[in-house]
Image (tube, rainbow, N blue to C red):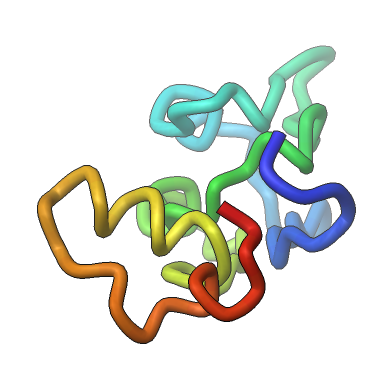
Length: 93
């Protein structure tokens, strides 16, 4: 978990076709598919990488990628400077 109750992740159940793509691409297992539907099971585990939204054929998922601590974690993993990241100001990481 990164920060509790701050994730921008949204799943529109009416648009969702329950293909399960999000369950496959999510690196933290945020989504589960059961009984022919997909739901968000572990919202606070979302690092807002955007893989789920990019791979959703029904455009049923919204998430603001590159915000908060997720941006800092990803940037540091790929060798980018953390300069200017909100994490330095808020101390969340």
